[in-house]
Image (cartoon, rainbow, N blue to C red; front, side):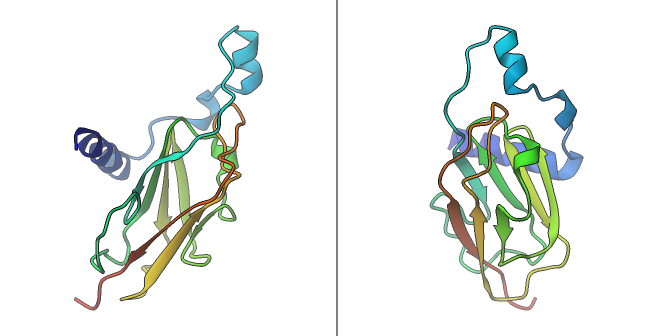
Length: 147
């Protein structure tokens, strides 16, 4: 429960304030090796998904314009996240933002009402050391009906 509360606060902070990290400040694999830091050889994995991921059952209560938030086990390479490998609702258009270990998708247009929305995070999403997830991660959520 404690971790869920912290992740919720992280998500709220990102949605309200935006990402305070700049992708240009993320070190590359070569820089880490040159500095003598232990090399990361394992890929990231999903630790939190909203709405509807990681065993959450929300029913059809998700607001139409709700951002999709996915947190990973380690910082993600912003260049590895694209509309092609972070697919929401069969190609729903929107803005992707990578902030450390979190990816936020903000839909351009609201979702239709009472539909099941599938989200696929492609296995090619990688950490800042260049290690890919390897396998796709999928989850679904349902949007609410007319107010």
